[in-house]
Length: 178
Image 1 (cartoon, helix red, strand yellow):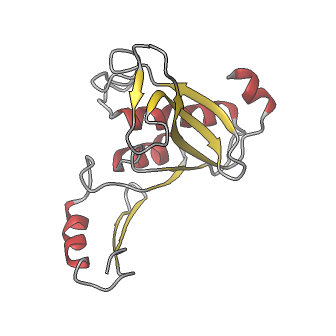
Image 2 (cartoon, rainbow, N blue to C red):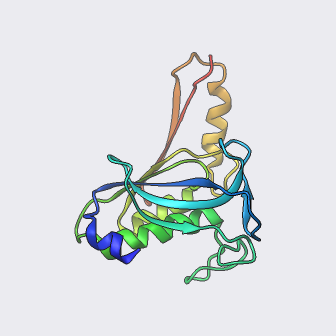
């Protein structure tokens, strides 16, 4: 990891994603992800440059009994979902190895995105983030959920949003189905 980061100049826009490396052997941390092309294998989280796709860091998922346990608390004593831990892991790498005073941006999908991780990235690390989010994730604003229900009656392309000015988070819901 250190040699890759020493050779690569981190760019402003980065992404966090998961990949499954096809593996037919035996290991205690083989994962099953039904929506992937290769459903069985070793789950790997990766930090990548958004423009080139270059993977500058990765982390292998070793199962709930390893360092990825959902029930463990982080350094601040907060219980976090595993996706939040992965995002914060890569965000700390960016802050440690990237140049200072850069407006970093991270992109992620709904596996990693929670309102709490968006707030923590901005407040604690100064990193902006964009991600899709599911309405059943913790900290999802109830007021946006109510607005989403009314969006179902609106034409495709209609939207509703909620702004948390104190934390600098904007949540936008868009009606993709007409």
